Length: 320
Image (cartoon, rainbow, N blue to C red; front, side, top):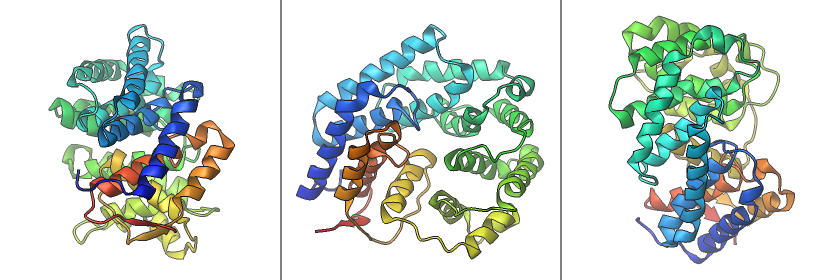
């Protein structure tokens, strides 16, 4: 750890962690993005940072519950990929034991039996958008190429009847996966065609303000060697004409989330933030969305910790 928490960071982080501790048992979903597994990710990071095992013990309970439900087949297969992504990230960060790799191997086995026709008949296939990202992250952990599973994921995505029903983060998960596998010759054409389908379906007649997540995607992938406008021309055009002004809290939280999930290294210049107002706003509403890792309290907490752990100087400046 490069820096100790200063007084303001300490105060804000404890406000986040203790609010989550209080309402944690009432959050119904085990989801990584929208539920308790994402909150557990913050608890593991926070517990290590302050040297207090209370928060870690609460997070461990969630992992035990998840594992029991998995073993007793109480988690639907199409929900396992997003959970598997969360488990992969927590193993990779050293937050939980490598013993959970057995969980990932079983997900791989189940995925190998899953076919595109089954996926096509699932009424809400949004959770399947995480298959590709799960494969990318867990491949690094398990040390196998998983080329067959990549092909399986592409077959499933080809059966999607449009992409406009997906959330911004789910769309970005698909775009990250497809952009990453463009370099694999065997899958280049399928990945390119899917990128075109997503770009045409979502961005060719876009009628609302672009979420900041899409700017992060373009920042992360646009290089001299890789021209992302070749693959997502409608998205790039929308970004050029989009005049949205993004809230600094949203920028701060989303960049941290993308770093945490996708491993992107995008950083902004220093941001002037009043984190206390953002925290108080979420505390006052007490809805599930205000707790989650996706721009809720858990996400803000991880963003504060990440800014202290991975930068020589913070990327934000708390308002006096």
